[in-house]
Image (tube, rainbow, N blue to C red):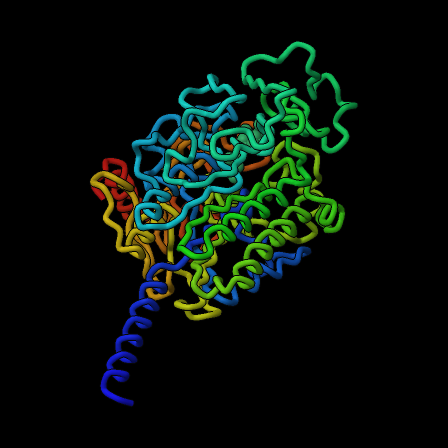
Length: 509
Ligand code: NG6
Ligand code: CA
């Protein structure tokens, strides 16, 4: 080889190496965020009676975390915290949002999507949103482009459900406009009063041919299922519950397809396994645990669709995938789907006390799987303590992004935990229950602050809220099920945790 050729090849090699380094530093990031999926609902977390082969394979390719937490035990505050890096309990108006709530994150706030967008990523929010839309609650015109939507929060593309499957409006919203808008059926939404002439679930049980409520959920009827809130119109734009997972998956694949050639960040928030659980007939009636089991299988299918597509396009190896859930599991959450009756030995919380809504561990301990084949060693399990509040700054670190002053005030960089290089993780995690009772836990102990709230969740009293007028201390490393309050014997530990919680509250930690 002559000198010139040699120099040329060295230069090319250098270029290739630089390109490789750049690509590994900038993986695609896919955040698969399930709804109400429990710490024990997946086979790789000991689930019974349901097969989740796609999630199992993902866990085998990466790290399965056993002590990871959502920030809150319900959806809106969890999602708010995840996307802003700020504890939701610091901010009014972040509790479970109505379908006509105004946008809760203000366009001026720096979001996780902004971190990616400003690092040159294409960004998308697909699926459940539940963080409000439009400038003002109750004032949206659903027949015109909404003045503010995820596009103002750093998401280049969005295809979302405004709130939950059980809340009106029952339509998808694409980039701030109702998808498949049907001009012959203008949409009206109210959470205050019914629309004359529109039948309600409470008066017309005979119209509920798909699913009947067990508590609440007796207002507007869409697709043979009654919901929370009142709605009129929609026509061809109305969703069919059995097609929601298919629509979400199809839009996710389309976004990947359009952005194969540059790094992308996709927040893929499934409707599964939230109520009303009414999966596609490919899944419905197939699982021994009934509709809740069918919905878990459908969730696994969604995961498989996206991963197969990444593989098909040669993108899987350099995609950092995180699979998790917004809060702990719940059985009867308002529809008569026999979720509790059909468990047959399956434990959605993997034996933890409490459920969704609760201050006990069942409220916020969630499945958490991380894979990035090009970078992470396969087949690991991590018992490190992790909180979703830290995804913001951990991703910031990954991208070497500069974050504006004051952004993500509660998030800390724990990238090494996320990538499996730190087995300890956080020193402590803060948990928020449905009524804002806060808990603080470390690897061994958990302190639940006293609360005047009821012992059972008001609308599902069988669920223990974790509230007690007395402060509680559990020795989690010996008492995983939070059975015995040992505060009297361990006053000093309780004081220490209480002081830490106070310091966090006051922004000193
Ligand atoms: C509750 C609903 C429940 C669910 C939850 C929000 C009733 C009786 N119950 O108020 O069905 O929608 O809100 O769930 O209305 S979350 O996962 O989005 O936070
Ligand atoms: Ca949820």
